[in-house]
Image 1 (cartoon, rainbow, N blue to C red):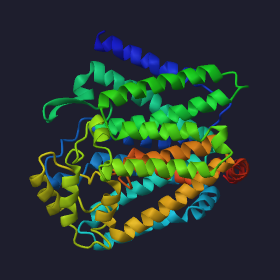
Image 2 (image 1 turned 180 degrees about the vertical axis):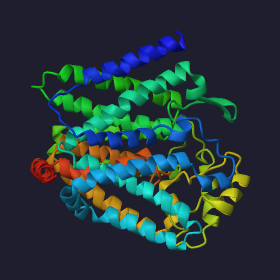
Image 3 (image 1 turned 45 degrees about the vertical axis):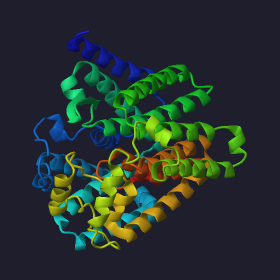
Image 4 (image 1 turned 60 degrees about the vertical axis):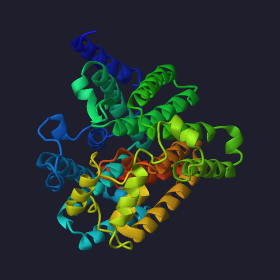
Length: 457
């Protein structure tokens, strides 16, 4: 098949997925397109990369400068989002007051710029982090928050996944990369590296599985069958892309998260809520033992990893030797800048730009104080998600699945408070949204407040 014909087929597949998943009863706000665009860029490539107006990063100075095109794009999208939230200020204020831990973490990140070597760069990146929160609040304050979450999945997955398949098979200059890792071909799809492709497959795959279960349980829904078909197609694409990407972090996380999602919807588990704690703890202990303690070398070998986790353990030792203030770190998003970055790039030919461990990444930038705040945030988030599961099994199970996958994902990748990292964006989204939309009472009160807000405008 020629690339032009394949492109037409891909377009038909995208339109077909939207047609299969149509639901005229859900009336979400037009403002939902703002987080959809934000998340779509986070899950693919920066605007400058799509326009091919940015040059590949070759030096530490380029990291400091950033892209003015991307900066303008994100600033504009955030400004529009803030305008929307101002119109919904009563709802937004209520939700912010209910999410003190994440606000405290954001505040500490801002304060840490005081001792940063590059406060201007750190502040620009911090504002992008605030942008993630803005997008989550737009979704939560929508007139139908659950429908908004579903449409966020649909509008991003139905476009990015088929395009990834198209790029890999028919546009290799866009969807593949050669030579960087020992001459082997790597598959990146709409993203810029195989790890990010694996990351979005992890997120969209669990979202599709959740939506499949949701459609399956809606016995009286006339569009139930076609919606299940749409999610089955997405799951097939996810599995194919995960195998092509060969991302040995995302695949195990997808399998564990999906297993937890399915298990927490079983009656036997619903009747024994304590079993959820046991399942989550067991998966975390086993994962940590394999990754950090070498409990099963055969498992690492099966996943294509050596005992150094593809040089990650060597990198971790080097990074710890560069720490100067273990209590407060170098300041938010400031470690991988300037002389430190130049030193690391001289030591490692593959030019790392992250610690490949989310907890170590937080420690490097924010010190033990930041790690403590992160652990408090994670603990409270887990408690909120567990309560959400008790209130609404299907919605809460998705939150728990993403929570588990995110915790394990950060064992070998850095995704906590990384700007435009899809895993972190979903963490923020679920931490803020899931406990609220899981409660029928909360949904009703939210809609009442929203109606009052619209009347005020």
